[in-house]
Length: 367
Image (cartoon, rainbow, N blue to C red; front, side, top):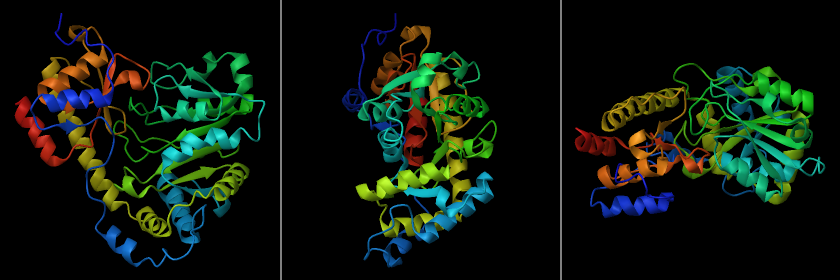
């Protein structure tokens, strides 16, 4: 058996320690934190927006909303109005707080439906609101099998999260089944579309293309514009839901800073820099898949979309993602995220947020 096959569970922090102890320069691909530069105009906008003196609008300035609507209409293909969009302080806080906000309108509903393999903030947000999480099984195409949700659970469901391209699997799937489930059961369908710009096998669709009643979508500028440090994003959808959410967010003081909103306004109007970032991520994913596949002596498939490789541990590692992650950390100094963090212990997630210099480092180690 492989020497790494009985390592037990490990956190990302422990894997980082193993990588440091290897004596190699550490390449950290555990977190999807952008490493590439944002557009050169960003510092100039921050320094000259004249928006730092007064309190910013919690739901977004008029300029922010108009730019967001233009982007939604032109790039995503959705026509909305000013009352159907709002600004976030990054998408993570919106995702985590949404159950706490919406349970006020339906206190009789105490379940949040999440993909069985998913970003952990969906279950964290449910727990923070005092709600249960129910993991929806996956279909063979990576989509969600809402037909498998028991009627008793469906009657109690407040929100159902969908995410395509999925983090971490990269699956792109049809959202029509989720939309039908929501309509049939009175469940709010919330779509995390933060990787909407990164479709490789096909273009992702937006939930809102199917209509907005009872539906919300959240988008982010963190990956598309390399602005994770500025914390800004967008939510859109059902006008009544958006109004209710924005009013409570205003009361809580959840206000994206004015200069940050000014940057976002400009970024929504610029697709050229997003195309450049798409090329970077796709090239890295292809190289990483080739290199890791050679190391494991088994093909590593490219994802349908997103910026992560979802790599299954082979029999050599007893099909244990933590064992594979331990080997990668100790042998080549590569820190990855064990799949158990996302709902499947057989995998590891490898982020393409690796700088060009670090890619060269990995190439030299892997030949």
